[in-house]
Image (cartoon, rainbow, N blue to C red; front, side, top):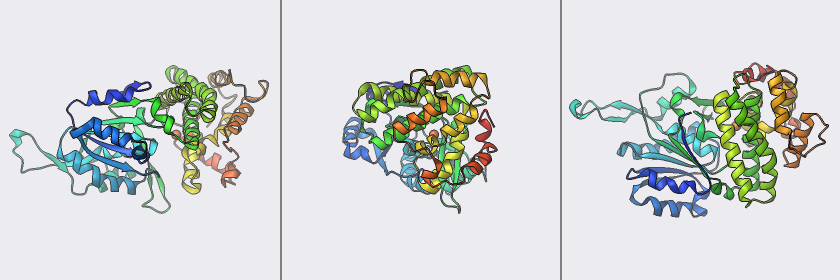
Length: 378
Ligand SMILES: [Fe+2]
């Protein structure tokens, strides 16, 4: 895992010094302006800040990546080595992962002795879109240095090599996965203080995403002792601290524990990838607009039920996950305790309550999918 991770409240302040005299373009989630962060960063970065690109809330779609490329690529092209800094939640981080990939071609007008100047390919984003759709190989790329500053505790995107890009240009819309060895950021500043700004719904849904990453790493065919330790630690933290953060949004200990849980879960599933719950989640997000974390969490009880009894390792780890949980009677089956906990944070897990009335058929189909086959009980 090649990402240089900094962690801790206030660690984002190291960014300035680390940048040195390099220039930067910042892609930031929209609330950064109202929170006063844009003004602060603009002051701190001074002349090094070449552009501030605002990313409004929404899906990380192909159409939006295309739109942002028009703003970001000319800035990256103008000065080699310009750092692309992503400040925001999963959507912003995922879009930045795609945009750091700028298709280029050699410019024959440049003297070979002084190096070949690489300019943005005239076909621009079409080349990236074709690669994301798997209809063409990746073109020659100029990869901008990418730094990640997550403002939510959940996606783990800052330590994985993949991103989700929703292809709404085709009918029906498709989920495309950017999943490449060059997808890792160079560094990540995981600063729990930044997550205090999260509204309750975002805190909950991103926390559920982190829990899903952790559990999916446990009931996964690609699990290893390293991912197991991280996943159990992450899941336990979410179960303990998410209810606290929802009750007391300014609780520093809770925010810090959730950021660490998100990071640990991210590191765990960067090894294993996701499994059944994620495989089932994407259609629910696309069709019903259910936020990603909740769309994953609603399938966790189903996956838990199927996973239990399949593998001694998984059973043991799931027991460890629940060890300190006081939701649900201790004598109840694990899945009932998980359901009680999910209900306690207001996460409706009955697929029908999200407009899904063919859950059984969906589970059967998902078990045969690429992600579903990672699942231990597939
Ligand atoms: Fe996820």
